Structure formats: structure tokens, C-alpha cells
Length: 230
Image (cartoon, rainbow, N blue to C red):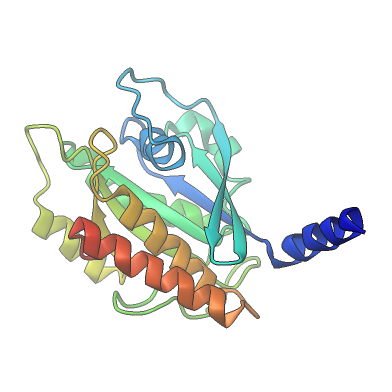
């Protein structure tokens, strides 16, 4: 009897589990891999190890009784990997558009990354105003939504080249939430990811209302705890 109840419990648990696909994009060396590792493993690797093609990881996230499996696809930045990257834009539900606050070139490349994502399968209009969630738009391939957050990294390093006001203004002009983070110290990382996941879940057709509300509350709590404005 206990075994049967356990089997039913596992079945119900699986029925409540959602999977979402999140990609990271931005120039090589901007800290995309470090950012993901900091969130998933709470670790920071100071030695620079460039991503070859695509790196992949799964992060289970619990929202009350609901479990969400986040599939994280870390796309390598060099142009040589374009043919690899272009297969992973389709069906993306969320994206981190990353630049290095100490590198103006990586900031100025953001527009090119948006164009590439749109060309190879992401929605041509991937976002909405800062205060709300993504709206459905016509696109090249399903799904109908992709939530994009801008993340300025390496705030722990000296020699900043892109002021916060400039980065925030760029995100606002493109109707994207903006976060400043440091993978080294962990500053802003939890707020960034929890807010992105909450936004993605809010766009899923038929998503459980309790799940969406819980994710939203968790994201708000993370932003308040870290003093982060998205």
C-alpha cells in the first residue's frame, strides 16, 4: 500500500513539474558561464575557461508544491560558433542578454545579439515594458513568447566603462528589465534569475495561477533582499 501511494505521489509530482528553456547570449568573456555557475552551484571559478559551442545544465527550482526544471543553454560568443548557436534559439522561453560592464565593446554588441537571435528563431519582438510581462507577438517559430533580461556583469572589477545609467537606458529603450550582477560576489544573481523565471512562467499558456503567484513573490523577495531594481 505504501509503495502504491509513493508511486501515485511521484506521478502527481511529475504532473506538476514544468520545464522551461533559458539561453544566455553575449560576447565571449562577458561572464555568462560564471553567472550560471554562481546561480546553479553557488560557486565562482576565477580561471577563464571559454565555452566551446554550447554548454548545458539543468536546475530544479521549487515553488511551493510545484517543481520547475530550468534547462540552461550557455551559448559560446565567438563568431566561429554561429552554426552551433543558431540551432538553440528556437523554442527558447527566456534569455539573458549579457555584457561586461568593464567592456564597452561587449555593450555595443548587444544589438547584434538581438538581431542574431531573431534571425535564427527567436521572436522578432521579444519583450515588453519594464513593469510587466511579455506579450504574445508574431514570430518565426514557436513558442510565442521569449522573455529577455539585460545583465551587466563584473561589477566587482575596477575600471568600469559602461555607467549604470547608460546600461539601464539601453534596456529601457528596448523594453527589457535590467540587472547589475557579480558572479564573483553573488551580488544580484538570485534576484536576476528568480525574476527571469517568474516572468517566463507568467507567459506559459495554462500555467498554474498559484505557481505564477508564488514565483512572483519569490522574485520580489529576492529583489528586496538584495536591494535590486529590475
